[in-house]
Amino acid sequence: MRELGLILLSVLLIFATLEVVASHGDQPLSTIAAQKAIFALHHQAYIKVSPTLLGLKGQNTDWVTVEFSSPNPSVEDWIGVFSPSNFSTSSCPAPADNPWVEPPLLCSAPIKYQYANNSTPKYKETGKGSLKLQLINQRSDFSFALFSGGLSNPKVVAVSNKVAFSNPKAPVYPRLAQGKVWNEMTVTWTSGYGIGEAVPFVEWGPKGGQPIRSPAGTLTFDRNSMCGEPARTVGWRDPGFIHTSFLKELWPNTLYTYKLGHILSNGTYVWSQEYKFRASPYPGQNSLQRVVIFGDMGKAEADGSNEYNDF
Image 1: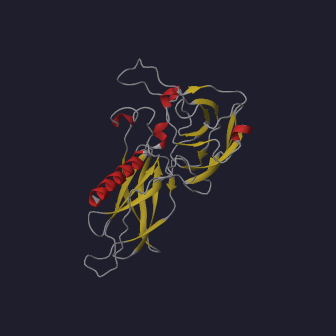
Image 2 (image 1 turned 180 degrees about the vertical axis):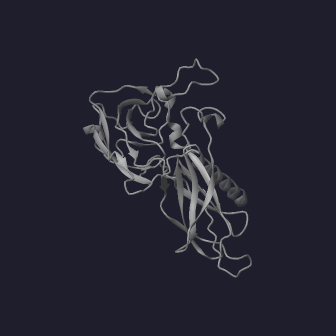
Image 3 (image 1 turned 90 degrees about the vertical axis):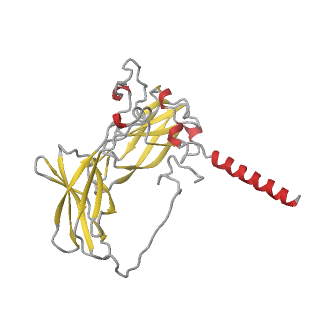
């Protein structure tokens, strides 16, 4: 009987664990009913963002202050961040499969959101609040909207001014990967420059040595590459252009520096900041190797937006 009791207890614990896992719900942004959104702009409501120009020191992320006010505040009010800044019906493409379908009023889902009372607990009483939000350079400008009606029945009551990075098309976010052979490194990055606008390359070399340049290929995809809605509609976000270059014939254990570059059609150059890496050791060399293994760590915003508290 005791063994049977232990088995039943184990089964109950398993079901309890599954229940906890199931309660995590969907990714936060997927709970926004973008297709139900309506515009209900109120002349007494406002939302404004500062500063309007970001990344003045070449950084790829920056913080903004969002100030807002509503004459009818509620605990369900929230702030949505949109990029590109125009998220209205005018930016909706006609559906290829049914051009007679009327487009939704909200033509793109927000890239992030936060509740209005998150950092202003008395928002419901005062109707005024502010937030500090972090923006990442995503090759386009941003705008913010104050919503009422919660996530299930969103109503736009105010729209902010536009905010942009000083160089939204800048080459950013390099990723390194071992090449096809031991002395080759692959560099992949993202920019807003298509192959018709600029020629991508990597300038690199041993630290303190003479730099050389390696060309890069360019790829991208559009909304028609997606299999269907909502990826083709409100969920679509332009990925920019993906560039890949191969740095070859590296010397083992050598420290290299590199930076991403684009030659524009008028002959001017656009540069990234400088990065560095150490080349792989020679095959068979007695060297210390470290491996970092991680996974299922969840995903959270630095400013707390869209955040799961139970990873």
